[in-house]
Image (cartoon, rainbow over all chains, first blue to last red; front, top):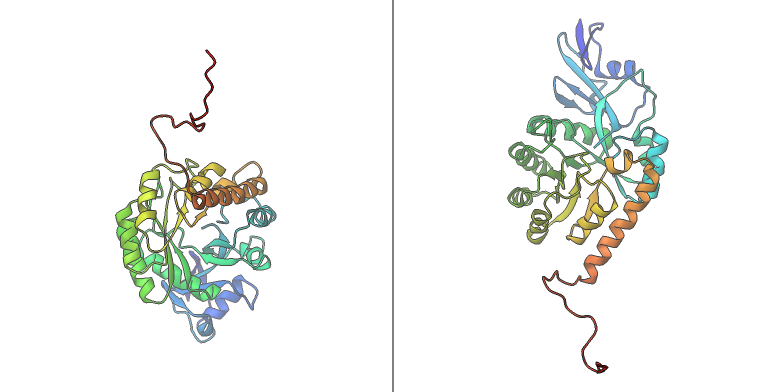
Amino acid sequence: MNVAVNGVERELPSGATVADVVRSLVEMPERGVAVALDGEVVPRSEWQATSVGDGQAVEVLRAAQGG
Amino acid sequence: MGTGGFRSLEQLEAALVASGAEIATVALRRVDPGARNESPLSVIERLGLFLLPNTAGCYTARDAVRTARLAKDAFGTEWVKLEVIGDDRTLHPDPVELVAAAEELVADGFTVLPYASDDPVLARRLEAVGCAAVMPLGSPIGSGRGIDNPYNLALIVEQAGVAVILDAGIGTASDAALAMELGCDGVLLASSVSRAEDPAAMAAAMRKAVDAGHGARRAGRIPRRLHAQASTPDAGLPRLG
């Protein structure tokens, strides 16, 4: 299935979870990281349990200089 | 202190230490696997500073609220510097979206510190919806102009029942001192330090400036007069002619 991860289209196996997506970008366990699925926060405690669907958009965010 | 604009995390750390700041802000951005793995978060934690996430880059209440919630999940804090931008060239806040976002976040239990314009009416609105402080700009972010309208700032200070933090536009030490002399409870600055020729030195100067301005405010200044008021009394004046 196709999922947009941080704005980039990627092909993921069906059944991929939010945790899988995060792990593909950062080393786990990762503090200071937040995830949004189609714009809504997915709490860290639900990353493993939340699967990602075809056509959805995932944003994996962390602290950056600024503010 | 804001963490934006520093050329390296080493420079950021040196400036934070020199500044004496107790609170540092960060933005929330996409993870970039290609970039170095360090983030300002590690610097802030190592120094034991208080982390204040910022909704930098948001133009709508909806985005700002979502960003605040993401930051809460990432960092475990309910404090947020709320920034909702209304104009790309000036980076002035959008007051309508800002108040809406503030109201929603306060209802959600957040401690909201809103980056605001220097309009005293907006400041009153933000306080009314429950913001923990009001953070008026002195001049546009990064402009280094200092305080464009000291009268507005004084009006905000006069009416505020919450802390007033000057946020944006500070250019050099005297700007920070003036903010404190006008009655601000603190200042939030970034570019004036991060983009200075010597950030750590400027950070140290800002620390002194804030201290000086705060002290002067508490000491109670003399008023500005149109005419002179002699500091030497006439009594005992000799007659020599």
